[in-house]
Structures are given as structure tokens and as C-alpha cells.
Length: 409
Image (cartoon, rainbow, N blue to C red; front, side, top):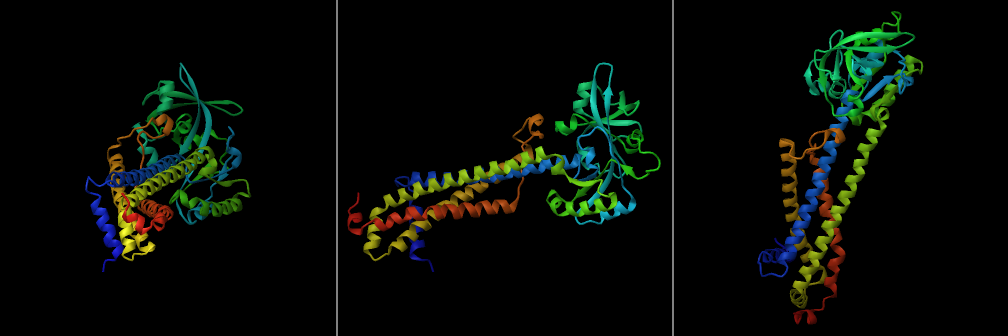
């Protein structure tokens, strides 16, 4: 059974379709305000989440979620090895959320051509290396085999190298060691802090450049640990830290990717603050638009309110009638806003309409995420906050006196 409040609200709502109605423009403006505000909120959430996921995937693809290393190696040109014994590795692999482990060898050096030189870090990768991401970043060529290196597009442009070229690398210990490599391919991650220095080479070639000696057959510079997702790092890192401390006597630690690249992740987290500010601003715009629309609706129907009160309607019933009226406007605006937002998000995912400068943003198109639960949460929050914002303005109805309202022009 339909209540009187719902019946009247539906009648009022349908009457706003009449162009001669004074409230019709106000209803259209309120609907548009809700639609655009909600669309901006959904698109903002999608862009922020998509951007955070894309950049963090690039970083963890080039590094890993957790790195087990001697912390003296951080920021030092000297390499401090750890022993990745089978027992040590098996305990790491058996830890919760761990999906893959890989041994890494590194070596600082200089790559030199006849015209220029570049400071580099050789990253030695073995057969166990998860090459999914670096393969996706390949511009040309293949992953390195013996005496081959994979360089970035930035390095290739600086040194004027191309696939198949041979180049000398110099490494400094007590003596200068020289190696000649063949460029087997070029990659491009659009992340300068990787592309500027990182060069991939076979693990055995890089390990041979380090003075570890044959007495340390399990030595490596780092154990990269891949997890199911970045969200698993806080729970898994303490477990790996305890395992690492036990096997290395405290000489090595489990360092998260956020600790290794704090500036990048601080920047990504800052996007959440920007998103929150936009969401708050858009909710305020939607609320203010609806408040103005409700006041116009009440003003236009002052005589109707007076007649309803004269017939015995209570202030509560009249208020509920206009709140139901406002709810219909809000729901219609939300439906339009969802359609607009989802259409734009799908179009961006499909065709990459909005492009970016990858040298600044690390990606060449605006990445967007389509996540159901955040969209539902935004819709619920918008509806709840907007309706709550209308409670106080709706009390103006209690001040309308039937005798004066009926004569109101």
C-alpha cells in the first residue's frame, strides 16, 4: 500500500516535467549537480586506484615486494653478500603469502662508448627470475644470455647504442676490471630512477665480478621475494625478518619495497589525500545544490503545504513528502552520474583516450580501475550525506502557517 507521503511526492515529481513549472529548472539543476558530482567522485576514485596500482606494479615488477639483503648495501657502491642456503630459501618460500623467490647479484660500474660514458648498476638475474614484467617492458630484443646485457631506452639514447652493439663496462675493486658485453635488447619502464642506471645481465656474469670466492657457493646480493599483493607486505615482512635474522645472525634484513623507495610510495599515498579532498568537495557541491533545489520546491508549493496542513496533515508528514520528493531527484541524478562515470572509465580502459607524458607520470595513458565496492560505497555515502543535509532545511515547513500559505502568491 502506497503511503500518502509517497503518493504526493510522486505527483510532485511528475509535475516538474512540465516546462511551465517554476521548479522544473531547479530540479534539472539539482539532478545535474548530483550526477556530475557523483561522476567526478567515481572517476577520481578509479583514476587514483588505477594509477596507484599501475605504478606500484611497475616498481614491484622491477624490484619485488620484499628484498632480503645486507642493509649496508643500500646506498653503497660496495656489495655485501648474503648466503641463500637451501634451508634459508625453503623457509622463505614456506612463509604465508609468498609466491616466488629469486636470487639477484648486483655490481656498480661504468658503461663506456667512444663518445660518452654512464654510471650503471648491473642486475644479475638467473633462470629462477620472474621475467613477466620486464618482458612486457621490452621494446626490442630478448633477455640476456652469457656476456649479453639488456639496457634501457634512456641508456641507449644517451650512449647511442642499439641491439647488437658491443660495449665495454668497467668495474672498480682494488684493480679495474673490464668486460665486453653485447646489447641483446632494450626495455622501457618510463621510470627514470630505474631506466637511468639498471642494466640486466646473467646472474653468473655478475656474480663473477664480485669477490665472493668459491667458498661461498650460495652467495648473492639480494633475495627478492614476491607476494600475492602489496597489501600482504605488513603481515609477511615481520615473519621474513625473523627468518632472516636467524640465518644471517642479524647481518641482513627483510626490506619492504616501500622502505626501499620511500619517496615514490609517499607520493602514491599523497594521492589518497587529494582524492579525499575531491570527494568531500563534490559531496558538498551535491548537498548545497539539493538544499537550494529543496527550498525552491517548498517555496513553489507553499499554498499546497498550507492546504495539506488545513486538511490535517502534520508537519512530519509534509516534511516526509518533500524528503521523498528530494530522494527521487537524488536517485535519478545518481543513476545518470553512474552511467556517465562507468561509460568514461570503460572508454578510457578500452581506447586510452586521455594520454600523459610518461617522463613525468611513469605511464603514457591515464590508468583507471573499475572496482565494485568503492563505487557502491561512494553511492551509499553520497545518498546518506545528501539526505542528511536536507533534514535541517526541511524544517522550514514547520514555520508555514496554513492561513497565510493558502493566500500566498
